[in-house]
Structures are given as C-alpha cells and as structure tokens.
Length: 309
Image (cartoon, rainbow, N blue to C red; front, side, top):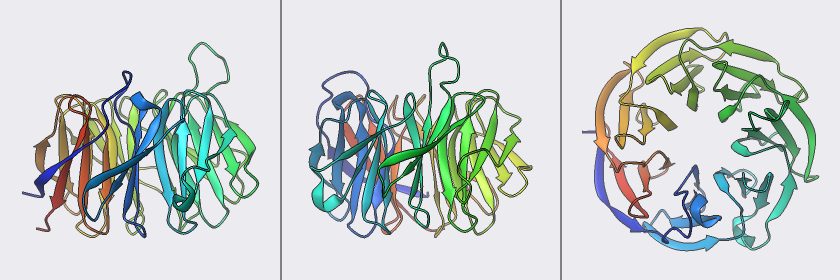
C-alpha cells in the first residue's frame, strides 16, 4: 500500500455545476488552494490540521491554482472571464486580474523571469483562439500571445532548464517555450497517444510524465521528446503529480474514480486507490507527503498519507 486514507475535509456545497479543478500547495505557509469551479471561488485548506479555512470569491469559472513559494504568490486561471488572478496569501482579498487569451486553464511560472504562462483552451469555432499567454507578473500585463496548433491541457515549468512544457490535446504533442525568449515556440514533441492531458516533470532524470486520454501514461525525455516507455492506466486521466521524495507518481482518473500510483524508478503500477466517481483532480503537499482527492458528489476532500516502500 502506498496511499493510506486518513480522513475527509468537508468543503462548501456547489452553488452551480462544475465541482473542483486544479489545486496547489504553498509549502511555506502550509496552505492548499483548490479551484472550486462550481462556486467561482478558491477554497483554502490548512495542511497542518487538514481543515477547511475559507473561500476566495469572485473568480468566474476558476479552473486552476498555482503557487510560487519563492515570491509568496498564488495564481488562478479564471476561465469564465478570460483572466488570471494574482494575489499574496497575506492579502487574499486583493486579487489583481490580468486579461489573457480565451479560456485560461493550465498555469506555470518562471520565478527567475517572473513570467506566468497561461495555457488557453480556446474555442474550436474561433480560429486562432488556441494560444499561450505570457504574463509579466511584475508589470501585471501580457507580453506575448503564442499560437499553438490545438486545444491546450496542463503545463509545467523546468526551473533548471528554464523551459515551459505544455500538453496539446490534438494534434497530440507537447510544445516547449523558452522563458528566455518567451514570444514563440522553441520546440514541439509529437506524442503517440490520444489527448495528452495531465503533465508533471522529474527534473533530476529529465523525464516528463504525460497522462493521455487514450488511457496510457507516457514517459518522455524532456530534452529530446523521445518516448521512453508507455504504461496502461485505469481510465481517462486528468491531474498528475510527481512525489520526488518517494519516487511515486499519482495519476488521477475521474471514471471510475481512482488514483493510479506508479513507482517512477521501475514504472510499475503499485496500486489503484478508489476515490469517488468524477474525482478527477488532486492536490499534493510535498512537505507532509499528503495527497488530497477532491470529491464532487460529496463536496469534500479525501486525505491520504503516502507511505514509503
């Protein structure tokens, strides 16, 4: 057993359909921020006590949260109003909003350059709406809008190499943006599986973990784009998190409602942990090795402690 269930956290009921979406943890403050899309809000959880604290409202269609511990900032992708939100955890009421492209979803941040990348899902009926918006966080303005060949999914940043990686659903690929030249695509890697979705990075081994709608997990060399291995997963995935300390990878699957846990040294699937149907997103606290699965039907979070082998 890798994940041990240790309890639940009750969260606010949904005001409208939508449930939960991407989450992030501020390690220094021990706070988890999760997009409560159905409530146009970010829910805040205390990771030390595993209790719900409060909601940050007025974030229309919020699809994700991202944290910069280095700069003590939280970012939100507000898909319903085509903005990203920027605020400090010490002043959660003062959310600065920056207009970006159509339907911001995935977020990644370069602390060295103070650049936020918002991957915009666009609209299939609007030509040219699939883009990446690059935001200068200090100036609170978009400095580049980069066209991409299809609907975006999640994105990660490699701080050591200074590169953003973004999943594109169709045509299936991972595109690359260099934070030192953030006005164009630096590279693109074709993927051999339908619908690249969840994405995370192991910088020590230069591997990307790309979970695809084709019910397969791809292990990809982040330098060349070569696919090193392919692994079956339990269904259509969404959020992926890598636990560097325990060398575990969590792949979240809403139907049937499980977390597939892989050993990233052997790429053996250790277990499939039941959550709840529709639970497609998780949060990960790397300090406490705790995983939070967000359950839309019962509007709560299931809390799991990861146990080393």
